[in-house]
Image 1 (cartoon, one colour):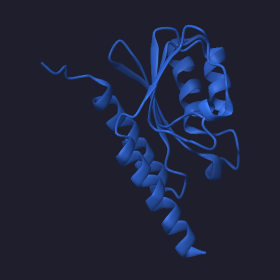
Image 2 (tube, one colour; image 1 turned 135 degrees about the horizontal axis):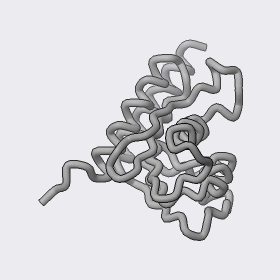
Image 3 (cartoon, one colour; image 1 turned 135 degrees about the vertical axis):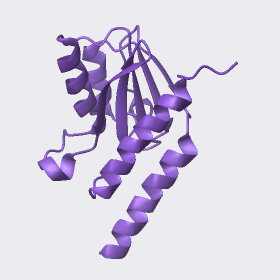
Length: 149
């Protein structure tokens, strides 16, 4: 029996956010935060729109989730993100004490695993959910970007 709300279901929601970023000319990375099968935050990259290098999808999602919950800790929450978090985002996720991180595509150059970033000891991280779809969207974005320049 397949539960209606599983990692694939929520990653599809994160991919919708990545598509929204793509449409705005932002690097197409999307994120959502879930608690008890309920989406409490949706976000995507806004670095170009806000002219802010810290406006990654994860950072936007952390802030939105904390505002929703009325506190800075994201215990019992899961972050779904279409690309493995970078070192900066992993650091913020550490401090948020998020319980679980699920990413789609691995980032072998800039991902927190490659950088040796430490997550909170109670945070579980897994990847590969809809990785092909997330990677394809990123590839399409950068091909389009190169062709415009």
